[in-house]
Length: 113
Length: 112
Image (cartoon, rainbow over all chains, first blue to last red; front, side):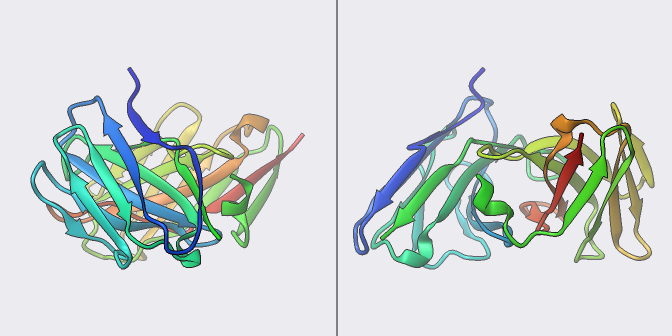
């Protein structure tokens, strides 16, 4: 059982380049999330999808877009990468929106130069 | 993975001692809380959860205490081991269709 799988694990981008971070879960979870983690800042929510077909902004959505492709997959796109987007990105999923734990992927370490 | 721990509060504990990690949560309406453990280079892993209708919940070597009056959550780890060294996060949730909100984390360092 793979759980939550993120690709790629590492990426270096030049300022202005675009890329898509991929996330897939095999637990039949309804809700999926993208967080970013910076030193001393904990985990901050970028976007989430409470169910297939819906997406909502989190705390730090600027500079990002998301697509809930189907129930399994939730991608995060950087259209024009900036150095401020250098971070570790985590995808997570939950069975339902209330009173359940979230399962996390292993993270994508992104550096924008 | 080490860079995400910079500037975090750090708790240093002798191996075999008990550890207490504290968390002040933000929303008095929060009704569900989770503790996560994050080891270097890995994603957060679930440790234990508690609902707001409880004050205490025990797991294997871990206990979570909830004080709703002062919006405080704590994680107690019994007989701390080197493998417990990690960053620990509390997370809260309120209402339907709202995501988990995480605290900034505490680094636990176990001295052998």
